[in-house]
Amino acid sequence: MTSPEIVFEEVSKFYGDVLGVNRVTLRIPPGITSLVGPNGSGKTTLMNLMTGLIHPGRGAITVRGLSPRDPERLMRITGYATQYDAAPRGTTGFQFVSTGLLLYGYSQTEAERRAWKALERVSLTEAADRKVAAYSKGMRQRVRLAHAIAHDPEVLVLDEPLNGLDPLVRAETIALFREFAGQGRHVVLSSHVLQEVDVISDQVILIANGTIIAEGQIRSVREEIHEHPSQFLIRCRDASRIASLLFEEDYITEIKLNQDRLGLLVWTRSRQEFSRALTRIALDGHSIESVLAGDENVDALYEYLIGGGR
Amino acid sequence: MAVYRRGYQRYRGDLTGRWARLMVLPRFAWKRLLEQRLVVIILVAALFWPLACAAFIYVSNHSELWPGLDRDFAKMLQIDGQFFVIFMNIQAVFAIVLAAFAGPSLIAPDLANGALPLYFSRPLTRLDYVLARMLVLVGLLSPVTWVPGVLLFAMQSGMAGGSWIVDNWRLGAGVFLGFLLWIVFVGLVALASSAYVKWRIVAGALVLAFFFVTAGAAELINEILRVDWGRALNPGQAMNQIWRSMLGAEPMRGPETAECLIAIAVMTGILLLVLERKLRAVEVVS
Image (tube, rainbow over all chains, first blue to last red; front, top):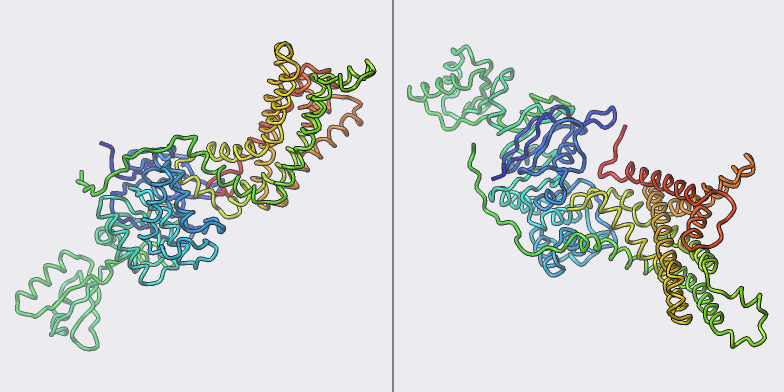
Protein backbone atom coordinates (compact mmCIF):
# COMPACT_ATOMS: atom_id res chain seq x y z
CA MET A 1 0.00 0.00 0.00
CA THR A 2 1.33 3.45 -0.88
CA SER A 3 1.92 5.99 1.87
CA PRO A 4 -1.04 8.33 2.21
CA GLU A 5 1.26 11.22 3.11
CA ILE A 6 2.81 14.09 1.24
CA VAL A 7 6.52 13.80 1.83
CA PHE A 8 9.22 16.41 1.23
CA GLU A 9 12.78 15.23 1.76
CA GLU A 10 15.50 17.88 1.89
CA VAL A 11 13.77 19.82 -0.89
CA SER A 12 15.35 23.02 -2.16
CA LYS A 13 14.17 25.23 -4.97
CA PHE A 14 15.92 28.33 -6.26
CA TYR A 15 14.62 30.64 -8.98
CA GLY A 16 17.98 31.63 -10.40
CA ASP A 17 19.59 33.37 -7.44
CA VAL A 18 16.30 33.87 -5.63
CA LEU A 19 15.47 31.39 -2.89
CA GLY A 20 12.15 29.62 -3.18
CA VAL A 21 12.43 27.07 -0.39
CA ASN A 22 15.48 25.67 1.30
CA ARG A 23 16.05 22.14 2.63
CA VAL A 24 12.42 21.47 3.42
CA THR A 25 11.67 18.16 5.09
CA LEU A 26 8.01 17.51 5.80
CA ARG A 27 5.52 14.72 6.23
CA ILE A 28 1.98 15.97 5.76
CA PRO A 29 -0.69 13.50 6.92
CA PRO A 30 -4.28 13.55 5.62
CA GLY A 31 -6.50 16.26 7.07
CA ILE A 32 -6.49 20.03 6.76
CA THR A 33 -3.01 21.49 6.71
CA SER A 34 -2.50 25.23 6.55
CA LEU A 35 0.60 26.89 5.22
CA VAL A 36 1.18 30.09 7.12
CA GLY A 37 3.84 32.69 6.46
CA PRO A 38 4.42 36.21 5.23
CA ASN A 39 4.26 37.18 1.55
CA GLY A 40 7.14 35.67 -0.40
CA SER A 41 7.91 33.15 2.32
CA GLY A 42 7.60 30.14 -0.02
CA LYS A 43 4.00 28.96 0.53
CA THR A 44 3.07 29.00 -3.15
CA THR A 45 6.43 27.46 -4.06
CA LEU A 46 5.64 24.53 -1.74
CA MET A 47 2.24 24.13 -3.38
CA ASN A 48 3.70 24.32 -6.88
CA LEU A 49 6.30 21.74 -5.91
CA MET A 50 3.77 19.26 -4.58
CA THR A 51 1.62 19.62 -7.68
CA GLY A 52 4.59 19.25 -10.03
CA LEU A 53 4.23 22.70 -11.60
CA ILE A 54 7.86 23.26 -10.68
CA HIS A 55 10.49 20.73 -9.77
CA PRO A 56 13.01 20.92 -6.97
CA GLY A 57 16.68 21.58 -7.63
CA ARG A 58 17.46 19.19 -4.78
CA GLY A 59 15.57 16.62 -2.76
CA ALA A 60 12.56 14.44 -3.46
CA ILE A 61 8.80 14.81 -3.14
CA THR A 62 6.09 12.17 -3.14
CA VAL A 63 2.38 12.80 -2.95
CA ARG A 64 0.60 9.72 -1.64
CA GLY A 65 3.40 7.67 -3.10
CA LEU A 66 3.31 9.39 -6.50
CA SER A 67 6.01 11.55 -7.98
CA PRO A 68 5.05 15.09 -9.05
CA ARG A 69 7.06 14.40 -12.21
CA ASP A 70 4.27 12.08 -13.34
CA PRO A 71 1.31 14.41 -13.98
CA GLU A 72 -0.63 11.67 -15.75
CA ARG A 73 -1.03 9.83 -12.43
CA LEU A 74 -0.56 12.62 -9.89
CA MET A 75 -3.14 14.99 -11.32
CA ARG A 76 -5.81 12.32 -11.31
CA ILE A 77 -5.72 12.39 -7.51
CA THR A 78 -4.84 16.06 -7.08
CA GLY A 79 -6.90 19.22 -7.43
CA TYR A 80 -5.10 22.54 -7.43
CA ALA A 81 -6.61 26.01 -7.34
CA THR A 82 -4.00 28.71 -7.72
CA GLN A 83 -4.54 32.22 -6.41
CA TYR A 84 -4.59 33.61 -9.96
CA ASP A 85 -7.74 34.52 -11.76
CA ALA A 86 -6.97 32.53 -14.87
CA ALA A 87 -10.39 31.26 -15.94
CA PRO A 88 -11.07 32.22 -19.56
CA ARG A 89 -13.50 35.11 -19.35
CA GLY A 90 -15.40 34.17 -22.49
CA THR A 91 -16.54 30.81 -21.15
CA THR A 92 -19.35 30.13 -18.71
CA GLY A 93 -18.64 28.72 -15.27
CA PHE A 94 -20.15 25.40 -16.37
CA GLN A 95 -18.02 25.22 -19.52
CA PHE A 96 -14.91 26.07 -17.52
CA VAL A 97 -15.45 23.21 -15.08
CA SER A 98 -16.68 20.64 -17.60
CA THR A 99 -13.84 21.33 -20.07
CA GLY A 100 -11.36 20.76 -17.27
CA LEU A 101 -12.98 17.38 -16.66
CA LEU A 102 -12.72 16.42 -20.33
CA LEU A 103 -8.97 16.91 -19.98
CA TYR A 104 -9.03 14.29 -17.24
CA GLY A 105 -10.53 11.84 -19.70
CA TYR A 106 -14.13 11.78 -18.50
CA SER A 107 -16.78 11.28 -21.14
CA GLN A 108 -18.92 14.29 -22.08
CA THR A 109 -21.88 13.00 -20.03
CA GLU A 110 -19.78 12.18 -16.98
CA ALA A 111 -17.95 15.52 -17.25
CA GLU A 112 -21.23 17.43 -17.35
CA ARG A 113 -22.65 15.48 -14.42
CA ARG A 114 -19.56 16.10 -12.32
CA ALA A 115 -19.39 19.76 -13.33
CA TRP A 116 -22.93 20.34 -12.08
CA LYS A 117 -22.19 18.48 -8.88
CA ALA A 118 -19.05 20.55 -8.25
CA LEU A 119 -20.85 23.82 -8.97
CA GLU A 120 -23.61 22.72 -6.63
CA ARG A 121 -21.08 22.10 -3.86
CA VAL A 122 -19.77 25.65 -4.14
CA SER A 123 -23.32 27.09 -4.46
CA LEU A 124 -22.79 28.38 -7.97
CA THR A 125 -25.46 26.56 -9.96
CA GLU A 126 -27.56 29.67 -10.51
CA ALA A 127 -24.63 31.46 -12.16
CA ALA A 128 -23.35 28.36 -13.97
CA ASP A 129 -24.49 29.55 -17.39
CA ARG A 130 -23.16 33.07 -16.97
CA LYS A 131 -19.81 34.02 -18.41
CA VAL A 132 -16.91 34.06 -15.97
CA ALA A 133 -16.24 37.67 -17.01
CA ALA A 134 -19.50 38.64 -15.31
CA TYR A 135 -18.61 36.94 -12.03
CA SER A 136 -17.74 38.80 -8.84
CA LYS A 137 -14.42 38.11 -7.13
CA GLY A 138 -16.03 35.67 -4.73
CA MET A 139 -17.79 33.83 -7.56
CA ARG A 140 -14.55 33.51 -9.48
CA GLN A 141 -12.96 32.13 -6.34
CA ARG A 142 -15.78 29.59 -6.08
CA VAL A 143 -15.60 28.53 -9.72
CA ARG A 144 -11.87 27.91 -9.26
CA LEU A 145 -12.68 25.76 -6.25
CA ALA A 146 -15.33 23.87 -8.25
CA HIS A 147 -12.72 23.32 -10.97
CA ALA A 148 -10.33 21.87 -8.39
CA ILE A 149 -12.81 19.52 -6.70
CA ALA A 150 -14.80 18.41 -9.75
CA HIS A 151 -12.79 15.22 -10.29
CA ASP A 152 -13.11 14.30 -6.61
CA PRO A 153 -9.40 14.52 -5.78
CA GLU A 154 -7.67 12.87 -2.85
CA VAL A 155 -5.32 15.79 -2.47
CA LEU A 156 -6.76 19.28 -2.63
CA VAL A 157 -4.21 22.10 -2.82
CA LEU A 158 -5.66 25.58 -2.52
CA ASP A 159 -3.83 28.87 -2.58
CA GLU A 160 -5.71 31.48 -0.54
CA PRO A 161 -9.09 29.77 -1.08
CA LEU A 162 -11.07 31.90 1.37
CA ASN A 163 -10.16 35.28 -0.10
CA GLY A 164 -13.11 37.31 -1.30
CA LEU A 165 -15.79 34.93 0.04
CA ASP A 166 -18.73 36.29 2.00
CA PRO A 167 -19.23 34.86 5.51
CA LEU A 168 -21.96 32.40 4.50
CA VAL A 169 -20.04 30.94 1.56
CA ARG A 170 -16.89 30.97 3.67
CA ALA A 171 -18.61 28.79 6.26
CA GLU A 172 -19.89 26.46 3.52
CA THR A 173 -16.42 26.25 2.02
CA ILE A 174 -14.84 25.43 5.36
CA ALA A 175 -17.50 22.73 5.85
CA LEU A 176 -16.51 21.33 2.46
CA PHE A 177 -12.85 21.22 3.50
CA ARG A 178 -13.83 19.44 6.70
CA GLU A 179 -15.87 16.90 4.77
CA PHE A 180 -12.93 16.21 2.47
CA ALA A 181 -10.52 15.92 5.38
CA GLY A 182 -12.96 13.74 7.30
CA GLN A 183 -12.87 11.21 4.46
CA GLY A 184 -9.11 10.82 4.84
CA ARG A 185 -8.12 13.18 2.05
CA HIS A 186 -5.51 15.90 2.12
CA VAL A 187 -6.57 19.53 2.10
CA VAL A 188 -3.52 21.77 1.93
CA LEU A 189 -4.26 25.47 1.93
CA SER A 190 -2.59 28.77 2.48
CA SER A 191 -4.33 31.65 4.16
CA HIS A 192 -3.57 35.01 5.62
CA VAL A 193 -6.65 34.92 7.83
CA LEU A 194 -5.01 33.40 10.89
CA GLN A 195 -8.19 33.18 12.98
CA GLU A 196 -9.67 30.94 10.29
CA VAL A 197 -6.55 28.85 10.00
CA ASP A 198 -6.79 28.35 13.72
CA VAL A 199 -10.33 27.07 13.54
CA ILE A 200 -10.08 24.82 10.50
CA SER A 201 -6.57 23.34 10.57
CA ASP A 202 -5.62 19.93 11.84
CA GLN A 203 -2.00 20.96 11.48
CA VAL A 204 -0.07 24.03 10.47
CA ILE A 205 3.19 24.61 8.69
CA LEU A 206 4.85 27.91 9.48
CA ILE A 207 7.24 29.07 6.81
CA ALA A 208 9.44 32.15 6.52
CA ASN A 209 12.19 33.00 4.05
CA GLY A 210 11.81 29.63 2.36
CA THR A 211 12.49 27.70 5.54
CA ILE A 212 10.06 25.68 7.64
CA ILE A 213 9.89 27.31 11.06
CA ALA A 214 7.48 24.86 12.65
CA GLU A 215 5.01 22.15 11.70
CA GLY A 216 2.47 19.99 13.44
CA GLN A 217 -0.67 20.41 15.48
CA ILE A 218 -1.02 23.93 16.85
CA ARG A 219 -0.87 22.74 20.44
CA SER A 220 2.24 20.61 20.01
CA VAL A 221 3.98 23.41 18.13
CA ARG A 222 3.17 25.78 20.98
CA GLU A 223 4.54 23.33 23.52
CA GLU A 224 7.86 23.32 21.67
CA ILE A 225 8.30 27.07 22.01
CA HIS A 226 10.14 27.42 25.30
CA GLU A 227 11.50 30.93 24.99
CA HIS A 228 8.02 32.45 25.20
CA PRO A 229 6.12 31.73 28.44
CA SER A 230 2.73 30.14 27.84
CA GLN A 231 -0.37 32.19 28.55
CA PHE A 232 -3.41 30.87 30.39
CA LEU A 233 -6.65 32.64 31.06
CA ILE A 234 -8.24 31.52 34.33
CA ARG A 235 -11.84 32.33 35.24
CA CYS A 236 -12.41 32.09 38.99
CA ARG A 237 -14.19 33.81 41.90
CA ASP A 238 -11.14 34.51 44.06
CA ALA A 239 -8.72 35.84 41.45
CA SER A 240 -6.53 37.87 43.83
CA ARG A 241 -5.98 34.93 46.17
CA ILE A 242 -5.19 32.52 43.38
CA ALA A 243 -2.82 35.08 41.86
CA SER A 244 -0.90 35.33 45.14
CA LEU A 245 -0.69 31.54 45.42
CA LEU A 246 0.58 31.21 41.88
CA PHE A 247 3.18 33.93 42.39
CA GLU A 248 4.89 31.72 44.94
CA GLU A 249 5.92 29.43 42.07
CA ASP A 250 9.20 30.42 40.41
CA TYR A 251 8.12 29.34 36.90
CA ILE A 252 5.31 31.92 36.87
CA THR A 253 6.69 34.99 35.14
CA GLU A 254 3.73 37.37 35.11
CA ILE A 255 0.12 37.61 36.22
CA LYS A 256 -2.49 40.16 35.21
CA LEU A 257 -5.76 40.47 37.08
CA ASN A 258 -8.92 41.17 35.16
CA GLN A 259 -10.68 44.42 36.01
CA ASP A 260 -13.76 42.50 37.16
CA ARG A 261 -11.55 40.50 39.58
CA LEU A 262 -13.09 37.29 38.23
CA GLY A 263 -10.23 36.25 36.10
CA LEU A 264 -6.51 36.41 35.60
CA LEU A 265 -4.02 36.00 32.80
CA VAL A 266 -0.98 33.96 33.78
CA TRP A 267 2.37 33.58 31.99
CA THR A 268 4.24 30.40 32.87
CA ARG A 269 7.54 28.88 31.74
CA SER A 270 6.38 25.36 32.61
CA ARG A 271 3.02 24.15 31.48
CA GLN A 272 3.27 20.90 33.44
CA GLU A 273 4.24 22.57 36.71
CA PHE A 274 1.54 25.15 36.23
CA SER A 275 -1.02 22.43 35.63
CA ARG A 276 0.03 20.65 38.81
CA ALA A 277 -0.08 23.89 40.84
CA LEU A 278 -3.53 24.68 39.56
CA THR A 279 -4.77 21.21 40.51
CA ARG A 280 -3.37 21.72 44.03
CA ILE A 281 -5.09 25.07 44.33
CA ALA A 282 -8.40 23.61 43.19
CA LEU A 283 -8.07 20.71 45.61
CA ASP A 284 -7.47 23.24 48.42
CA GLY A 285 -11.01 24.44 47.82
CA HIS A 286 -10.52 27.43 45.54
CA SER A 287 -13.15 27.61 42.87
CA ILE A 288 -11.77 27.60 39.32
CA GLU A 289 -14.41 27.83 36.60
CA SER A 290 -12.26 27.47 33.52
CA VAL A 291 -8.70 27.49 32.23
CA LEU A 292 -8.05 28.46 28.64
CA ALA A 293 -4.76 28.55 26.78
CA GLY A 294 -4.26 32.14 25.72
CA ASP A 295 -1.67 31.59 23.01
CA GLU A 296 -2.43 28.18 21.56
CA ASN A 297 -3.36 29.68 18.26
CA VAL A 298 -1.74 30.40 14.93
CA ASP A 299 -1.74 34.12 15.61
CA ALA A 300 0.49 33.64 18.65
CA LEU A 301 2.69 31.07 16.94
CA TYR A 302 3.13 33.48 14.06
CA GLU A 303 4.06 36.27 16.43
CA TYR A 304 6.55 34.14 18.39
CA LEU A 305 8.17 32.33 15.49
CA ILE A 306 8.01 34.70 12.59
CA GLY A 307 7.58 38.03 14.29
CA GLY A 308 5.99 41.23 13.11
CA GLY A 309 6.81 40.67 9.47
CA ARG A 310 3.24 39.95 8.40
CA MET B 1 2.40 4.54 12.01
CA ALA B 2 -0.94 6.33 12.18
CA VAL B 3 -4.01 4.57 10.86
CA TYR B 4 -5.71 6.74 8.30
CA ARG B 5 -9.40 6.41 7.68
CA ARG B 6 -10.44 6.36 4.05
CA GLY B 7 -14.02 7.38 3.42
CA TYR B 8 -13.96 7.90 -0.33
CA GLN B 9 -13.70 5.82 -3.44
CA ARG B 10 -11.64 6.47 -6.52
CA TYR B 11 -13.38 6.76 -9.88
CA ARG B 12 -13.34 3.36 -11.52
CA GLY B 13 -15.27 4.16 -14.68
CA ASP B 14 -13.91 4.37 -18.21
CA LEU B 15 -11.64 7.21 -19.25
CA THR B 16 -10.98 8.46 -22.75
CA GLY B 17 -7.55 7.89 -24.26
CA ARG B 18 -4.64 10.31 -24.47
CA TRP B 19 -5.46 11.52 -27.97
CA ALA B 20 -9.10 12.09 -27.14
CA ARG B 21 -8.00 14.23 -24.19
CA LEU B 22 -5.50 16.09 -26.36
CA MET B 23 -8.21 16.85 -28.90
CA VAL B 24 -10.26 18.71 -26.27
CA LEU B 25 -8.09 21.81 -26.63
CA PRO B 26 -8.08 21.93 -30.46
CA ARG B 27 -11.85 21.36 -30.56
CA PHE B 28 -12.51 24.55 -28.63
CA ALA B 29 -9.76 26.46 -30.44
CA TRP B 30 -11.08 25.57 -33.93
CA LYS B 31 -14.57 26.60 -32.94
CA ARG B 32 -13.26 29.94 -31.69
CA LEU B 33 -11.05 30.51 -34.73
CA LEU B 34 -13.77 29.72 -37.25
CA GLU B 35 -15.95 32.34 -35.57
CA GLN B 36 -13.40 34.95 -36.72
CA ARG B 37 -14.38 36.47 -40.05
CA LEU B 38 -10.82 37.17 -41.12
CA VAL B 39 -9.78 33.54 -40.68
CA VAL B 40 -12.73 32.40 -42.80
CA ILE B 41 -11.88 34.99 -45.49
CA ILE B 42 -8.28 33.78 -45.67
CA LEU B 43 -9.43 30.17 -45.82
CA VAL B 44 -11.77 30.96 -48.71
CA ALA B 45 -9.16 33.08 -50.51
CA ALA B 46 -6.70 30.21 -50.21
CA LEU B 47 -9.01 28.01 -52.28
CA PHE B 48 -8.81 30.10 -55.46
CA TRP B 49 -5.33 28.99 -56.44
CA PRO B 50 -6.11 25.27 -56.01
CA LEU B 51 -9.22 25.82 -58.15
CA ALA B 52 -7.09 27.47 -60.83
CA CYS B 53 -4.65 24.55 -60.63
CA ALA B 54 -7.54 22.11 -60.94
CA ALA B 55 -8.65 23.91 -64.07
CA PHE B 56 -5.10 23.70 -65.37
CA ILE B 57 -5.03 19.93 -64.77
CA TYR B 58 -8.32 19.56 -66.58
CA VAL B 59 -7.02 21.54 -69.55
CA SER B 60 -3.73 19.67 -69.68
CA ASN B 61 -5.59 16.38 -69.81
CA HIS B 62 -7.99 17.53 -72.55
CA SER B 63 -5.70 18.69 -75.33
CA GLU B 64 -8.51 17.81 -77.76
CA LEU B 65 -10.18 20.99 -76.55
CA TRP B 66 -7.30 22.97 -78.09
CA PRO B 67 -6.94 21.80 -81.68
CA GLY B 68 -3.82 23.06 -83.36
CA LEU B 69 -2.04 23.68 -80.09
CA ASP B 70 1.65 24.44 -80.42
CA ARG B 71 3.79 21.44 -79.34
CA ASP B 72 6.03 23.60 -77.09
CA PHE B 73 3.01 25.13 -75.43
CA ALA B 74 1.47 21.70 -74.92
CA LYS B 75 4.67 20.66 -73.16
CA MET B 76 4.19 23.57 -70.77
CA LEU B 77 0.83 22.16 -69.76
CA GLN B 78 2.47 19.01 -68.44
CA ILE B 79 1.66 18.08 -64.83
CA ASP B 80 4.98 17.33 -63.18
CA GLY B 81 7.10 18.21 -60.16
CA GLN B 82 7.51 21.81 -61.32
CA PHE B 83 3.73 22.24 -61.43
CA PHE B 84 3.38 21.06 -57.84
CA VAL B 85 6.34 23.18 -56.67
CA ILE B 86 4.60 26.30 -57.99
CA PHE B 87 1.32 25.20 -56.42
CA MET B 88 3.01 24.60 -53.07
CA ASN B 89 4.88 27.90 -53.05
CA ILE B 90 1.69 29.90 -53.45
CA GLN B 91 -0.22 27.89 -50.83
CA ALA B 92 2.73 28.16 -48.45
CA VAL B 93 2.17 31.92 -48.31
CA PHE B 94 -1.47 31.41 -47.32
CA ALA B 95 -0.28 29.05 -44.61
CA ILE B 96 2.00 31.75 -43.20
CA VAL B 97 -0.78 34.36 -43.24
CA LEU B 98 -3.23 31.97 -41.56
CA ALA B 99 -0.67 31.01 -38.94
CA ALA B 100 0.05 34.69 -38.28
CA PHE B 101 -3.66 35.31 -37.59
CA ALA B 102 -4.50 32.12 -35.74
CA GLY B 103 -1.27 31.17 -34.00
CA PRO B 104 -0.92 34.06 -31.55
CA SER B 105 -4.30 33.40 -29.96
CA LEU B 106 -3.17 29.93 -28.99
CA ILE B 107 -0.55 30.58 -26.29
CA ALA B 108 -0.23 34.34 -25.71
CA PRO B 109 -3.58 34.69 -23.87
CA ASP B 110 -2.74 31.72 -21.63
CA LEU B 111 0.54 33.36 -20.70
CA ALA B 112 -1.02 36.79 -20.23
CA ASN B 113 -3.76 35.38 -17.96
CA GLY B 114 -1.42 33.08 -16.04
CA ALA B 115 -3.55 30.16 -17.24
CA LEU B 116 -0.75 27.66 -17.79
CA PRO B 117 -1.03 26.29 -14.22
CA LEU B 118 -4.65 25.50 -15.07
CA TYR B 119 -3.53 23.21 -17.88
CA PHE B 120 -0.54 21.76 -16.12
CA SER B 121 -2.54 20.90 -13.02
CA ARG B 122 -4.41 18.45 -15.24
CA PRO B 123 -2.99 15.17 -16.55
CA LEU B 124 -1.19 17.16 -19.27
CA THR B 125 2.53 17.60 -19.78
CA ARG B 126 4.13 20.60 -21.47
CA LEU B 127 4.68 18.40 -24.50
CA ASP B 128 0.97 17.52 -24.56
CA TYR B 129 0.10 21.20 -24.39
CA VAL B 130 2.40 22.10 -27.31
CA LEU B 131 1.14 19.09 -29.26
CA ALA B 132 -2.48 20.14 -28.68
CA ARG B 133 -1.71 23.69 -29.81
CA MET B 134 0.17 22.38 -32.83
CA LEU B 135 -2.83 20.21 -33.73
CA VAL B 136 -4.92 23.38 -33.90
CA LEU B 137 -2.59 24.73 -36.58
CA VAL B 138 -2.29 21.40 -38.37
CA GLY B 139 -6.08 21.28 -38.57
CA LEU B 140 -6.33 24.86 -39.76
CA LEU B 141 -3.51 24.82 -42.29
CA SER B 142 -4.26 21.41 -43.77
CA PRO B 143 -7.28 22.59 -45.83
CA VAL B 144 -5.07 25.16 -47.58
CA THR B 145 -2.00 22.97 -48.04
CA TRP B 146 -1.81 19.21 -48.35
CA VAL B 147 -5.54 18.56 -48.65
CA PRO B 148 -5.96 20.52 -51.92
CA GLY B 149 -2.51 19.30 -52.98
CA VAL B 150 -3.45 15.64 -52.57
CA LEU B 151 -6.83 16.31 -54.20
CA LEU B 152 -5.07 17.81 -57.22
CA PHE B 153 -2.80 14.78 -57.35
CA ALA B 154 -5.83 12.51 -57.15
CA MET B 155 -7.55 14.50 -59.89
CA GLN B 156 -4.53 14.24 -62.16
CA SER B 157 -4.25 10.51 -61.39
CA GLY B 158 -7.88 10.00 -62.26
CA MET B 159 -7.56 11.84 -65.56
CA ALA B 160 -4.16 10.58 -66.64
CA GLY B 161 -4.75 6.94 -65.74
CA GLY B 162 -3.05 4.21 -63.72
CA SER B 163 0.30 4.31 -65.46
CA TRP B 164 0.71 7.97 -64.49
CA ILE B 165 0.31 7.13 -60.79
CA VAL B 166 2.90 4.38 -61.03
CA ASP B 167 5.38 6.78 -62.63
CA ASN B 168 4.55 9.77 -60.42
CA TRP B 169 3.51 8.43 -56.99
CA ARG B 170 6.44 10.40 -55.64
CA LEU B 171 4.59 13.64 -56.45
CA GLY B 172 1.66 12.73 -54.19
CA ALA B 173 3.94 11.66 -51.34
CA GLY B 174 6.10 14.78 -51.84
CA VAL B 175 3.11 17.12 -51.71
CA PHE B 176 1.82 15.48 -48.54
CA LEU B 177 5.12 15.21 -46.67
CA GLY B 178 6.45 18.55 -47.96
CA PHE B 179 3.39 20.40 -46.75
CA LEU B 180 3.42 18.52 -43.46
CA LEU B 181 6.99 19.68 -42.93
CA TRP B 182 5.95 23.25 -43.76
CA ILE B 183 2.94 23.14 -41.43
CA VAL B 184 5.08 21.93 -38.54
CA PHE B 185 7.68 24.61 -39.23
CA VAL B 186 5.19 27.47 -39.65
CA GLY B 187 3.27 26.15 -36.64
CA LEU B 188 6.40 26.23 -34.51
CA VAL B 189 7.15 29.80 -35.64
CA ALA B 190 3.59 30.80 -34.67
CA LEU B 191 3.70 29.02 -31.32
CA ALA B 192 7.15 30.34 -30.43
CA SER B 193 6.10 33.90 -31.33
CA SER B 194 2.94 33.46 -29.29
CA ALA B 195 4.98 32.21 -26.34
CA TYR B 196 7.63 34.90 -26.73
CA VAL B 197 5.33 37.91 -26.56
CA LYS B 198 2.14 38.00 -24.55
CA TRP B 199 0.35 40.46 -26.86
CA ARG B 200 -1.56 38.75 -29.64
CA ILE B 201 -1.16 41.47 -32.26
CA VAL B 202 2.57 41.78 -31.66
CA ALA B 203 2.89 38.00 -31.78
CA GLY B 204 1.08 37.96 -35.14
CA ALA B 205 3.40 40.64 -36.48
CA LEU B 206 6.34 38.63 -35.17
CA VAL B 207 5.28 35.60 -37.24
CA LEU B 208 5.26 37.67 -40.43
CA ALA B 209 8.44 39.47 -39.39
CA PHE B 210 10.20 36.14 -38.90
CA PHE B 211 9.73 35.23 -42.56
CA PHE B 212 10.46 38.75 -43.87
CA VAL B 213 13.52 39.29 -41.72
CA THR B 214 15.07 35.89 -42.43
CA ALA B 215 14.45 36.42 -46.17
CA GLY B 216 16.02 39.89 -45.98
CA ALA B 217 18.95 38.66 -43.92
CA ALA B 218 19.56 35.83 -46.39
CA GLU B 219 19.69 38.26 -49.34
CA LEU B 220 21.92 40.62 -47.39
CA ILE B 221 24.40 37.85 -46.63
CA ASN B 222 24.42 36.77 -50.28
CA GLU B 223 25.02 40.34 -51.47
CA ILE B 224 27.64 41.37 -48.93
CA LEU B 225 29.65 38.15 -48.91
CA ARG B 226 28.99 37.43 -52.59
CA VAL B 227 27.85 33.88 -51.79
CA ASP B 228 24.65 31.97 -52.42
CA TRP B 229 24.45 29.80 -49.30
CA GLY B 230 22.64 32.64 -47.53
CA ARG B 231 19.44 31.31 -49.12
CA ALA B 232 19.50 28.47 -46.66
CA LEU B 233 18.70 31.02 -43.96
CA ASN B 234 15.50 31.97 -45.79
CA PRO B 235 13.05 29.29 -44.62
CA GLY B 236 10.83 29.83 -47.67
CA GLN B 237 13.65 29.20 -50.11
CA ALA B 238 15.21 26.45 -48.05
CA MET B 239 11.87 24.65 -47.98
CA ASN B 240 11.44 25.28 -51.70
CA GLN B 241 14.72 23.49 -52.36
CA ILE B 242 13.65 20.57 -50.15
CA TRP B 243 10.31 20.33 -51.97
CA ARG B 244 12.04 20.36 -55.37
CA SER B 245 14.14 17.46 -54.23
CA MET B 246 11.08 15.59 -52.95
CA LEU B 247 9.11 16.22 -56.14
CA GLY B 248 11.96 15.55 -58.51
CA ALA B 249 11.86 19.11 -59.92
CA GLU B 250 14.91 20.98 -61.15
CA PRO B 251 16.82 22.34 -58.12
CA MET B 252 17.38 26.06 -57.59
CA ARG B 253 20.76 27.71 -57.67
CA GLY B 254 22.26 27.91 -54.19
CA PRO B 255 22.64 25.57 -51.25
CA GLU B 256 22.04 21.85 -51.66
CA THR B 257 18.99 20.08 -50.25
CA ALA B 258 21.00 18.63 -47.36
CA GLU B 259 22.25 22.09 -46.38
CA CYS B 260 18.69 23.43 -46.51
CA LEU B 261 17.52 20.54 -44.34
CA ILE B 262 20.22 21.33 -41.79
CA ALA B 263 19.23 25.02 -41.81
CA ILE B 264 15.56 24.16 -41.25
CA ALA B 265 16.53 21.70 -38.50
CA VAL B 266 18.62 24.35 -36.72
CA MET B 267 15.79 26.91 -36.94
CA THR B 268 13.35 24.28 -35.64
CA GLY B 269 15.70 23.60 -32.74
CA ILE B 270 15.83 27.30 -31.85
CA LEU B 271 12.02 27.55 -31.99
CA LEU B 272 11.67 24.50 -29.73
CA LEU B 273 14.16 26.06 -27.33
CA VAL B 274 12.06 29.24 -27.16
CA LEU B 275 8.99 27.14 -26.35
CA GLU B 276 10.90 25.16 -23.75
CA ARG B 277 12.09 28.33 -22.04
CA LYS B 278 8.81 30.21 -22.20
CA LEU B 279 6.20 27.54 -21.55
CA ARG B 280 6.49 27.11 -17.83
CA ALA B 281 3.65 26.80 -15.37
CA VAL B 282 5.38 29.26 -13.10
CA GLU B 283 7.25 32.24 -14.42
CA VAL B 284 10.86 31.84 -13.42
CA VAL B 285 12.43 34.99 -12.03
CA SER B 286 16.18 35.14 -12.10
